[in-house]
Image 1 (cartoon, rainbow, N blue to C red):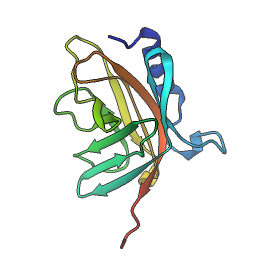
Image 2 (cartoon, rainbow, N blue to C red; image 1 turned 30 degrees about the vertical axis):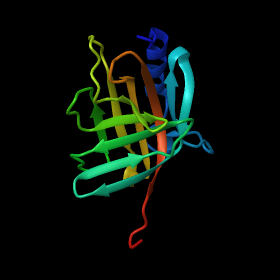
Image 3 (cartoon, helix red, strand yellow; image 1 turned 90 degrees about the vertical axis):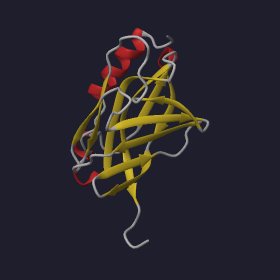
Length: 162
């Protein structure tokens, strides 16, 4: 497995240190971003925005592609803008997946063939304009490679009537 102990500890610190609750917690002038870290604690992508959609008990967010990575967040049992725990499992709700160059790469739906702790959250600011998200570690389907990610991004909703 390529995910290192220092990578995991860095991600945990990021989950604690990066403001995800709302604009009042961020340094003024700082843009929110979700940082994706891969092997060797190297940032491989930074997401600042996502197209978000809320409808009848569900929520989805899709980021633009950055360095080949794209993140998808799904909450099937959406009950409002608050905090949702992310867990690993084939039927997890909510869940996060990432593609790399358009191919399925990493997901909280994938369970590696070895025991490993994992935790994360999706957290919304009031009215859902900012979404914090983080998980560590998130694996590929085989459990041979992983990423960690944490931070916040701006949710862009389609204008009503358009």
